[in-house]
Amino acid sequence: GNSVTQMEGPVTLSEEAFLTINCTYTATGYPSLFWYVQYPGEGLQLLLKATKADDKGSNKGFEATYRKETTSFHLEKGSVQVSDSAVYFCALSPSGGSYIPTFGRGTSLIVHP
Amino acid sequence: NAGVTQTPKFQVLKTGQSMTLQCAQDMNHNSMYWYRQDPGMGLRLIYYSASEGTTDKGEVPNGYNVSRLNKREFSLRLESAAPSQTSVYFCASSDGRNTDTQYFGPGTRLTVL
Image 1 (cartoon, rainbow over the protein chains, first blue to last red):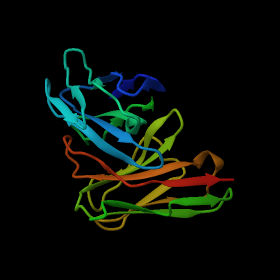
Image 2: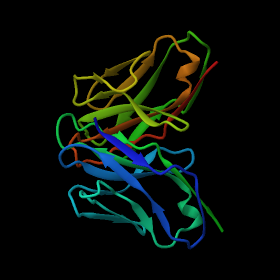
Image 3: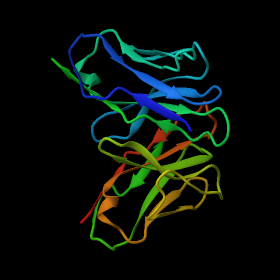
């Protein structure tokens, strides 16, 4: 079946540090890939997505590139802010069947001033 | 445009009590979903409705029932609550294609004593 594996947290960084959160997936065909962010006490919201191989999704300074050869979709940001503190979820939506998404377990990011 | 709304925001039940969680979306989406979020477990799909008039089990359906009342509304019912159902419940909706973003409600925090 489909699966998403992302690095365990928490990830703790100082403001302006470089961020990488690793995400790898298992799926047949060509799934769509997503990063969602969850701020404390809120629901998940889309951060960025990529729907085909080699696409780069970007938003709010975050980027991720769909790498089919390594089945990865790592999230990066060059300079994090305290306001980026949240839980980040990697997810895939399969290319066939019912399109039901599969989520990773989430990675907590804590950014200190 | 309210997006996805959920009621109630918080609920405390005693073991054996029943309740219904309500969800509505105003984006004319075809598909709706119920998830539960537990610490360290990420999001787990309880039930989903690919389109009006259909419902299907997800990963953890035991102890729950759903109703897709119309295209806008999708409710989740706990017939006899158990402490293991203490969780945060999220409703989501999408157009149902694999490239589509899921839009999440703010969540219901349920405690079963």
